[in-house]
Amino acid sequence: MKIIKTNQSKLPSIDFSNIPFGKYTSDHMFVMDYANGQWGDFRIIPYQGFTLDPQSKALQYCQCIFEGMKATMGADGQPKLLRPELNIERFNLSAERMCMPRVPYDIFINALKAIITMDAGWVPKAEGSALYVRPTMFATESSLAVTPSDTYTFYIYTGPVQPYFTTPIRLVTEQKLIRAVPGGTGEAKTGGNYAGSLMASQLAKKKGFDQIIWLESPEFKKVQEAGMMNLFFVVKNKVLTPKLSGAVLKGTTRTYFIDILIEQGVEVEVRDIFIDEIIEAFQKGELQEAFGSGTAAVVSQLAEIVHGDIIMKLPDERVISSMLYDEINGLRSGRIDDKRNWLMAVN
Ligand SMILES: Cc1ncc(COP(=O)(O)O)c(C=O)c1O
Image 1 (cartoon, rainbow, N blue to C red):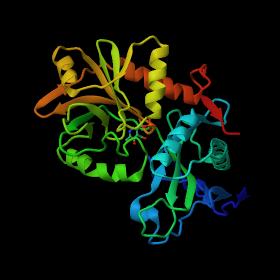
Image 2 (cartoon, rainbow, N blue to C red):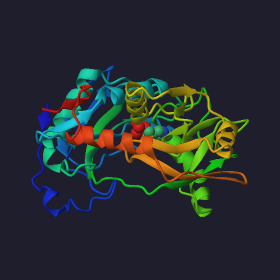
Image 3 (cartoon, rainbow, N blue to C red):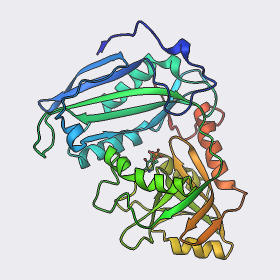
Image 4 (tube, rainbow, N blue to C red):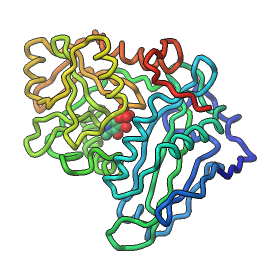
């Protein structure tokens, strides 16, 4: 691999006590190109822009995908990844869905290790903070033909982020706009899904809500996810989360949570969940908690869910979501023993 180091690190200018999500990028990036059916030209270079043909298929037809994961500083002072194989697997599912080439596991994991090791000084040390890692692939062929590109660029850049504390949020169900339908691209982490979701989020924010709950069209009854998080409900001490319908992103945090809950003997139901049953549980006083899961916040507890003119205010005691939040952050910082062997050292 070719390595070109920056001669002007941005690190001294960063105040690690104030690193809002997505504001700063680290010094270097890993880049490789795909041509003639294979990946090559592996390099680590200073963080910089790309030159893109105006007719590139990434720009014209949105043939692009990404991942989001975190590297954290372990108790031994070494950066660690949490179950990176889940992100690599999801990235390759996204690639397949968007007719893009897979990135072989060994190339992907070695690239992750190399770029995190290179910018290890950027990994924040405080528990809950992390080096956010963003692998991305985009189509570079210049052509107006609506066919898969022949050439691609894959890159990984990183940036430090502080704990993403959210006070309990208010969500409203969306009953007109949709994010994804089974058979669509909702299971792929591709930019178009996010562009398509902006309008509903903006409308909800204008009405004073933090985010929306996506329901499956055309009935708008089946619960999908919340904004950019998977959803969990606790009803009568049972944890419910929507099954992957083909329109729901397979969240890595969702997988950690399901595994931890099952291991702790908590009853978990992964199945179709309908808003009417959540309303019924609320009305009977059986809805104990609801929360979103995602890499950025780990857990976002819900204070309120609004569906039409029904307002569901959730109890202030949030036992399960608090336990899950603590378990993941404690595991990442080394405060909680990694008995499941989920952490992977990067060097
Ligand atoms: C649409 C959507 N759903 C769910 C998630 C949660 O996934 P993860 O836990 O892997 O961050 C994300 C974030 O990546 C997302 O963008």
